[in-house]
Image 1 (tube, rainbow, N blue to C red):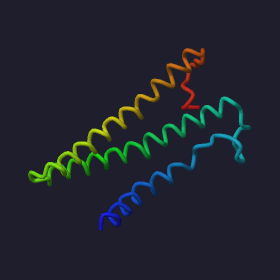
Image 2: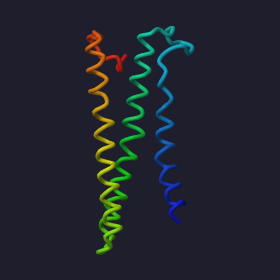
Image 3: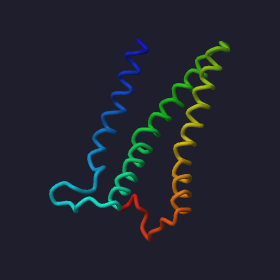
Length: 123
């Protein structure tokens, strides 16, 4: 039963995410400009946004919900309570790492001298 529920939940999370993945490559197709190194970085930015907005955030919210439900239904069972807390803490830490990764990448690119008027992920 758990596997069936998990499979259905992941199906409804992954299908909408895959439909949003269509416009990740901004060049090379008919009617689009030729691929350059700048558009390569724009593609990396789009992939990052796709992973954060469409994959990591919904999965973290699902994990927090599952952990919260486990805490609520533990009814004094310390094993279930600790498992729920671990799931919630791990999803919060993972979400923090995902969102702070942009800060790390921007800091490294800024140290290398990469700066533009318009952010490279919005090209």
